[in-house]
Length: 410
Image 1: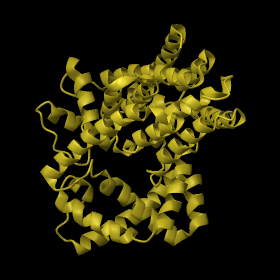
Image 2 (image 1 turned 135 degrees about the horizontal axis):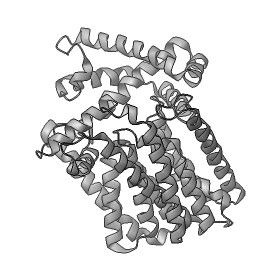
Image 3 (image 1 turned 180 degrees about the vertical axis):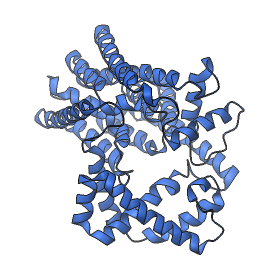
Image 4 (image 1 turned 120 degrees about the vertical axis):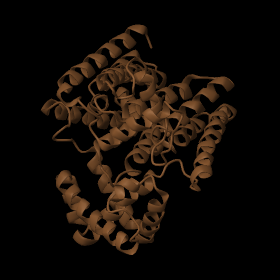
């Protein structure tokens, strides 16, 4: 990829993010979500070499600490964080363009992929929140570039470290390294010694973190987010499906996501009240007890019993949630109608990119993109939030570039 492409992509991406940041200044007085407040609190604890959380992982709080070195304590000046994330995501745009060039050997495809990343509403909006998505997408792009271009033992070790960092940023990325490395092995199985190195490094480091959690809590997990988030939503979703039936359930979520969330919250509250009635020692608000294993364990056991044998219902709710995740957002938390317009344009370009892969018979690339997309959308599908596209945004950026590539096979 030529240098001019990188400069143009970076400048366009940064300009778009700064414009969105400027329009978001009225909202920048405090962390905007409960999750954001928790990340800021954990960053402050990291300054004292303490990380007590089981529900969260440490990389994003450490990132907040690094950003806030110029204006301590962490999150004291949120605009510093937002500006840093604008810069980081603009670098991600370059990395997406570079990965596209590696796949298709086309400067035109790289430029197109990078410029469409610049107008990505998901990537742009994420920079204006104290949330993990911006760092997560950056680390995915770094890991993919290393996997595609680095050779030798050192490259494999750095790749493994990067995959570890992204998983300890968002645990939902835990299987992504295996998917990418599997497809790279299919493309060139003779490289298996090189591909084995990051797998070993990744397994060892994630194993160390899981072992650390087991030593301090008795739970061999990366994080307890499955209990505190996925299970609570999933049980409520299955109960909604039982109540309304598949057709009405799907119509509710796809056409009226915000209204369906309120209905789901009612089912969730009813179920948690039932759990509390059987476990009177639990706190009145389960949310405040998510770091307490005496709260987490009985809730997890109840939820597992509730979901036992409901594979079909769970799969259906995940598929509907995945559709909800990728449907256009009518009211973006940042920006306005133009964000929705850009989102629709980008979704169309992703679909055209997939069609281009079929037309050019780039079956390996198509299989990688579809497998990556399915994993990204189905794993957290019940929740159905635009932020969950972040796991797939990088590969979608590459796929978009396929439309302007003349190459028949990557």
